[in-house]
Structure formats: structure tokens, C-alpha cells
Image 1 (cartoon, rainbow, N blue to C red):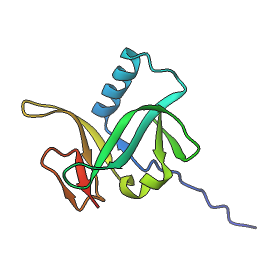
Image 2: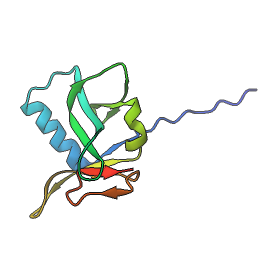
Image 3: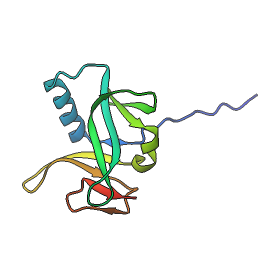
Length: 118
């Protein structure tokens, strides 16, 4: 009898409950259509070398797609190397308010946390 192995699919990126709440609120307030999902990515620039991309966009043929709590998420396959294992959080404090990126692949980050090097 052949052994059946179960394939476990995990999301390469984690969105905290606070981030999910804010993203769903933004999506509803801006009337983002259902064919759009959350795009996470990187681009060259910023004081540490790369900056994060976070916004709603349509899926392209170069994207990995996965779902987190009903939210479609798109990551360009070329960006996966830099983003695998990353956590996106929402911070609402006295000194800082906005999305925060906790990236285990970053070897250095800037003071504001929006750019990194890998």
C-alpha cells in the first residue's frame, strides 16, 4: 500500500489581526473591487537599499497568489526571496502609526522601518 503524504501549504507572509483589520477597512472605504488583491513587494530605493510595496492591485501572471483570512494577496515571484517569512503589523501608538514590516530576511533596516537591505 502506497503511503500518502499530505502537502502542507503555508502562507509565505503573515498579516497580524491589526493589519488585517486595517487592510479590510481601507479596501471597503476605497471600494476596491473583488478582482483586486493586496500586493506586497519590494522596489529599489530607500535609505537601506529596498523599500516595501503595499497596496491593492490586480494579479499579474508573474504573481504568487494566496489568501489570508479572506483577503487575496499577490507577491511577484521575484520578490518572494526578500519577503518569505515576513510579518506585516499595524501599529497605533503615540510615536508611530501605520503598517510595520517585520522581515527576518533583512540584514539592516532604516530608522523608520520602511526600507531594508538583504
